[in-house]
Length: 147
Length: 146
Image (cartoon, rainbow over all chains, first blue to last red; front, side, top):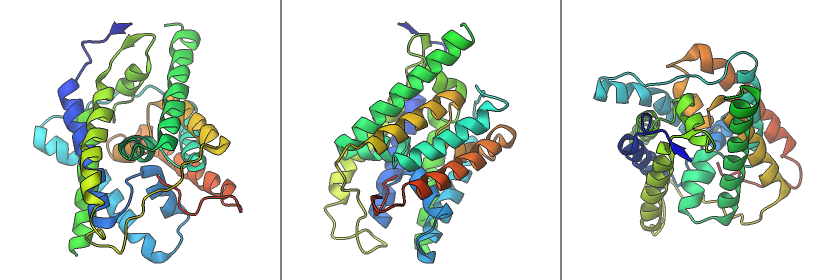
């Protein structure tokens, strides 16, 4: 295994992770809800009743604003480089939506929240989606692109 | 009003944490998932920090009788591991690996890079809708957890 020390950002990633965990904790403390993004979005698309929509919309507005808040604080742009383009993007988007709906969770719900509750079900889901993602990246980078 | 402000601020904290952590950068996500290439372990620190912060607080928070603005805690109770969980997680993992975007970062990136992310998000919402329809039969769980 070769470590990419040029890209390694342990402190920013740790602080960012603690902020994510704190947000999950505050959503549970204030609203009694699991901070699972696929579930929050899913409940917006197929709402169970009207009173269940408002909290989701407000939370999503905050998520949209978050990157701008950190840019204002640090004075630096959010570094991002795409890895997919063309038809791959919509296909990947559909798989992410479909998979998280069927599997009832994503990186936040099963990952941050499920693992923190020591849920075996979530741990299995995290193992499965991490494994599938690692295999996918291996195929794309080392077999298709031949890197 | 306090309730609405708290929700926006919690969402902002989440979005800001994602941006600081590197999760909004598909190349960094792919670098973390590329175990067999030149590996960037940073995102393990995101997961570690997030889980540990939530693990410590969760025990204290759920000792309360009720959340600050609600009647009760809505915490998933399912413990079974079925084929749906495995299939869904596998499909999600393939999509995540292909584009380096999972649902939270996709939403948080949509205003930063609409050219790349808007179509991804639209198709993700379509996938969520289809997935919900497929799993809303008699065997469907009452409250999906995430």
